[in-house]
Amino acid sequence: MNEFNKERIQKDKRLMIGLGSWATTNFVVSGIGWATVPSGEAHYFHQMNVLWNTVNIGLAVPGYLKAKRANSSLSFAETIRMQHKTEKIFLINTGLDIGYLAGGLLLRSTAKTNISKRDQFNGFGNSLLMQGGFLFVFDLTAYMIHNRHSKKSLDKLINSVEMSSAGLGLQWTIQPKAFYAKKQLL
Image (cartoon, rainbow, N blue to C red; front, side):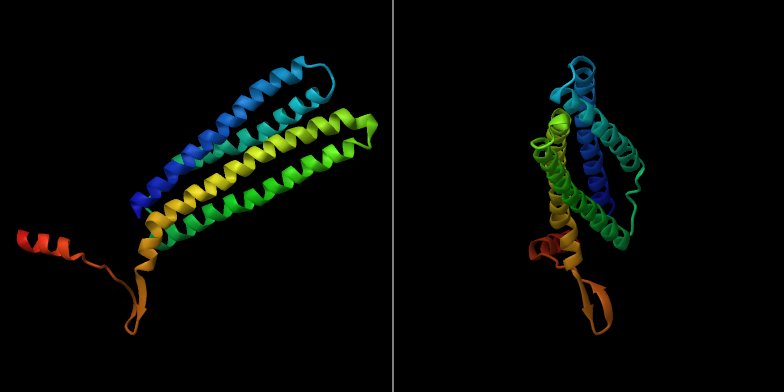
């Protein structure tokens, strides 16, 4: 369990570094854009990117620190709970990302009929589409990374737990080749 949890924690750290890198790059580039681009659609695009990535940085830094302090010495049951919680969080976030994309499309659609706020709605809408699109790919990829890790390592162990008439037990299959190699050593 300890090795599985170390790998899960390492994946979380790398993912938070990825999110933080995206957020920092967007924050700097759009911060410059917001400060230098004259009022208009691009100005609002950069403004929304700065605000959006303030939140992303606010999620990435604590997420990384939490992963860095995480305990890899979890029980079997705690490991399963943590794995399912991690996967569920990324799936829920993927659903929220679809909402961000829909919000971006709604703002762009509203801009067509609201002449006085056209630039603002288009700029904000384009930002939501870009940020929501990135987060959709990020969260779905994070879910798949963790899910694949679980299927590769944890599911094998879970599938070896069986109920019997004597209660709950763990079954290990000894490969004949390994058995004979051990027997020869004795």
